[in-house]
Amino acid sequence: VAADPFSAPLTEKLVGIVGEAHVLTDPSTTAAYEIDWTRRWRARARCVVRPADTGEVAAVLAACHKVGAPVVPQGGNTGLVGGSVPRGGEVVLSLTRLNNLEPVDEVAAQVTVGAGATLAHVRAHVAAQGLDIGVDLAARDSATIGGMVATNAGGIRVLRHGPMRRQVVGVEAVLADGRVVQRLGGLTKDNTGYDLVGLLAGSEGTLAVVTRIQLALVPVPRVRVAALLAVDGIETALVIFSRLRRLPSLEAAEIMWADGVGLVCRHTGRPPPFAESYPAYLLIECAADDDPTEMLATTLSWTHAVHDTAVATDRQDRERLWAYREHHTEAISAVGVPHKFDVTLPLGALAAFEQEVRSHVAKAAPGAQVILFGHLGDGNLHVNVLGPPPEDETVDDVVLRLVARHGGSISAEHGIGVAKAQWLHLTRSEADRAAMAAIKHALDPRGILNPGVIFPSRGAGGGQQPS
Ligand SMILES: Cc1cc2nc3c(=O)[nH]c(=O)nc-3n(C[C@H](O)[C@H](O)[C@H](O)COP(=O)(O)OP(=O)(O)OC[C@H]3O[C@@H](n4cnc5c(N)ncnc54)[C@H](O)[C@@H]3O)c2cc1C
Image (tube, rainbow, N blue to C red; front, side):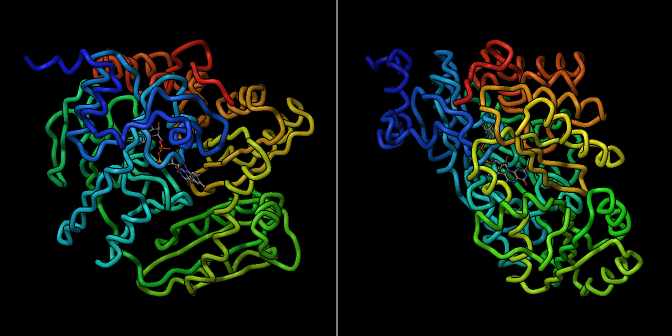
């Protein structure tokens, strides 16, 4: 008589599904899966499981569901809100082996890929056909398409192409109990009930595990031009942006300040962008089939508020300008473990918020260093506070309440994770939260998928402790 597969201890059962080599329990092999990119969140996993395909993901989830074992889905582990690492004792479900790239459908301009494929791999895969993905971000070499769907990632081109949700045509996903749902028909029109694809985008691993994704692709424009503009501050940057946004070729408008750029220069050893230092910098990029440089120059010619400009058209020069912006996250983390806030404000409130957040943090945590940068065109600032220890959440409360008072959102693109769960009520009403909780309960009645993420599970801050 065959033994009941569920009577075996869970780890043994998981070994039976994915093979011994892909169930990790030894701390020397699990450690990298147990700490997040920021080093703020760390806890032991029950084990790390690395399935190879959808069938194995389904079997792993069915086994965990049967015994009520909590599961933390993990992609590239570049998330910045603690949602991809254990809170203590969960099964970490690593999706990186699901990295299959299917042939590009040139007629539909779509491609279907495994959830574990990295953004950089998928971009390289579709580039041969002159196509690209509408979303790009600095963590491209490690961030997976599954993780990007789960967080509804934004990045540097939201202005033109929207966030990840807009790029996703179809999804295959495994529900908490192991059942597989699939919308991979590639249909432009499909009004047949609730939009499961849209629902899973931004669900942060709390509703299902995404296993395959069908992406809409965008053409690669022939010419790109980047420009770094030295300005006095965010108010000037916003005035300039209000003109630039009329350019159909505008793809990115990023803001950074002198202190962040200085940090990047020290961290990477690169020279400052200009001979003189200026209070703030606006980095823009335009892309089109016809060279947009002249139109950009004309659009900027009316203003005398730009102190200095660096323009780059070839790839190497553009990457040199982008490096000042893209190395911010790692340069800040090299100084210490920051309190990170990824917030959006209405554009009209952005300048006031910038001033107030600096003064409010200075009052709440004297001596703390505040480094700001972000996606100006989306009203999205990344507020980084260095100084207060990770477990002291005074500044978190101060910053997020300030965001709510200005009519903003406490998460623009990184998600709620465990880091922001206790503040969700600031910008989502009780009715909103009840509706979300009902959806969560319907799809994951035992609450095994990523407990503590979005909805605090144990105590105000969720179960996971900052390390
Ligand atoms: C240097 C740097 C720059 C960044 N820049 C940006 C930026 O510009 N814009 C932006 O939006 N983000 C940015 N991020 C954050 C991060 O890269 C994104 O959130 C990314 O989408 C995470 O992908 P990942 O594969 O690493 O997911 P992980 O970190 O592994 O997981 C993130 C969340 O998704 C869940 N998850 C992962 N895979 C799956 C799956 N297959 N099914 C279900 N749930 C899953 C996890 O449980 C977790 O809750 C940046 C991060 C770094 C380190």
